[in-house]
Length: 592
View 1 (cartoon, helix red, strand yellow):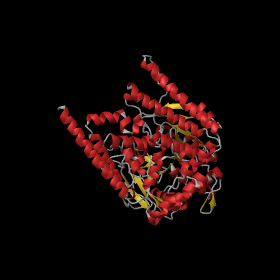
View 2 (spheres, one colour):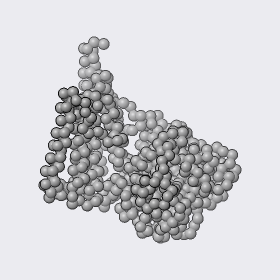
View 3 (cartoon, one colour):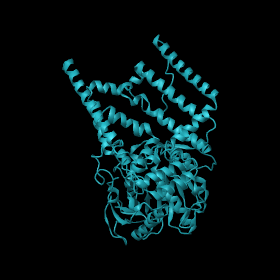
View 4 (cartoon, one colour):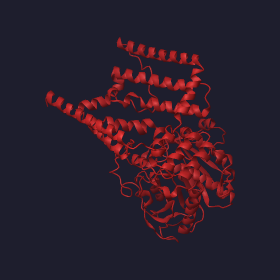
């Protein structure tokens, strides 16, 4: 192919990309304003401006600190230029600054081998680190404001990374040359598709949604719906062993996403693995609520969720006491229910396992940034405008911001700059399959747990009963994950002394999802345990033992001690409850 043909193709693609960009701009400008009639009331829904105004005020009161910060920036850039000047005359010296461990943005070899891109990378890293350090060192800010400005400063520095722009990303520039600009055409097409899907707001498609079908290539473990009410469908899974442990295993996932994070594929399904170990497994498949359920409360999710499921399992198996699992916010509900049952002197749960779940919210991490009173009032207005529910996209965006480089900017690069199709990745498909949340439930949860931390302090009441976790004598297994941004292991650790019975605490490698979904066959990551009686997390770490691979077998051995004797395997429909429909059921099929 001659150079004229190549130039012609490139020109055509650039013209097409330009046309698509104009259509995107027109569609965006013509889209209805998000928020509708309450837009003026929520122009700063995250209450960011107030925090940064206070930051500027405190900085203005300390001009000496500003001068010192400016001097530090110049010193760093002078050191950076010295490094490149020495390299220019042939000296082999290391980079002035390296990306932090786990930063995947600068993997392309040109960030190291091409001195121009190496300079761009290091200049960005120096400036971003300086800005974050400067903000974190400003005196006079209360803790809440300090955390907020630090969080959003990182959001800003992440957004302006050179990897996010065509002209400063060597991988994108190479793709543009190699494809004669077709990557940009496809990227604009992907952008337009996502803009249309979001009805004027950008909804980044993380996975190829057309590839996945619930019940076909995700959520495939065989089972039946044996009970349902307005809040959940209860799935009982078919046994794969001739005998099972007497006590059933009842799982309560978070209602923010669908239950099938625990049943993605056969080879990484925790549910399938537990069934194969000889457990009768039940899981709550929560409803994706609409406006009709706007007034459902945290109490309702206990009464018609956990307590109703316990009654259903007893009817299905004839066994009153179960082993229970609570994942994330499902664990927060399970812990609250344990305290409620203890106050009522009712023994319904033989053991309780918590997957990355928080019960004490004092050190609850970056999500606390979103829970001041001004934001809750703004959030309430937005939910009222949506008919009394929090739209799934709003909650998904919040979680994506906690790991913006992985869950936002990596897709901007892949989908829009490189023009690639979304990945056929089951975990990302699940991550995009968020659910709505009832207004009453969500506001209660944010205010009573994140803001006021009432459960751990013994101030919470459900059904008029005061909750005291100290009365819970049930054996407890606390699983946390070292890199968890949603339920930090420090926060999970704080639940350890709250219970009145034996507690096994463990830290797994990886994060909120991969730290949990780590089957033995994968041979990945590791976990840490320390069975000595220590008072501080630092002492716990000092004496912890690291074991390579999955923590599931370690936990299953603990679970087995509470599972009872072996009995003939139970099939869905054998007990007092009739089968409603095949798993995975209809509730999980409802998309937002």
